[in-house]
Image 1 (cartoon, rainbow, N blue to C red):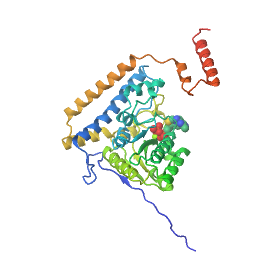
Image 2 (image 1 turned 90 degrees about the horizontal axis):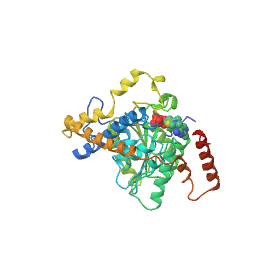
Image 3 (image 1 turned 180 degrees about the vertical axis):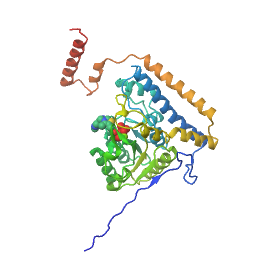
Length: 363
Ligand SMILES: Cc1ncc(C[n+]2csc(CCOP(=O)(O)OP(=O)(O)O)c2C)c(N)n1
Ligand SMILES: [Mg+2]
């Protein structure tokens, strides 16, 4: 018997505004000038905060952190498509989305200073704490999304992020499979920044796109230009609409580039060329969006500089707030493992305190 083709698939790529500033007016999202400026401000806040954090880290005033430089559109524009009732389940390279959804910058600074208090989510903010364990956010997001539906909240959806490297984790496949089976209202955004520390995208998988990984789970997947805020916003809006109307989950592969270091403990010159970085800078998302806003008459160069000054003042006040705070005693980490005192944890706390004393020569 001849072989029959029983299934074929295709992967579409969405772009609205390219690096040269060409706009596909048919696909341009319907956003007001105020909304466009708000999106620009949210991305600029992430860009400027990131830059300031890098300086603070180099001055020994902040701990190790993963910069978002170059990826501001890939996550911030996706979060911009959320409705008030939606939940965000972050990973670790989505600062723009976190700040947009009500996570205070000072908490972000505290967290990356190793202060556990920073992980506290403000009352009423619909977001989960940062998940550094690669891929774990996806499972939490699916559980949350399915739980919300189970509790009868049909209009609520969940946004979550993962990197290109994270798509090789078992958690990724389990999350997509479960979301597909249960038609959980989740929007999965893969921030494909081309690198998982020093492992390039090509060495991560033989699959030609990461969006096609959705196919096996029976859910829609699309690739977007992740440096094009309009394309990310458009794809995310459609995915949220689908999720809300009972159409289940969507995978969005946002193709972007990590322009900076993996974390402040990394040196990319060891594994990639300056030429590659230079090419990637020509694609970066903020300049492109600023040009679009200028052409549209929504924000001129003066307006952008005023916005930058405002954002910098906001960052300065968060830094001042951080530096006026006293760090918590390190043994606090043992206090919230369980709701009540636990013998094993008490023993660990005592042993930890003894080693701190010894290290300080207080024995
Ligand atoms: C389960 C797990 N394994 C390993 C690590 C260490 N680690 C942190 S980030 C990272 C690379 C992740 O790459 P990718 O998913 O592409 O995200 P990116 O860092 O590029 O944003 C690794 C291996 C981790 N945090 N969690
Ligand atoms: Mg990556």
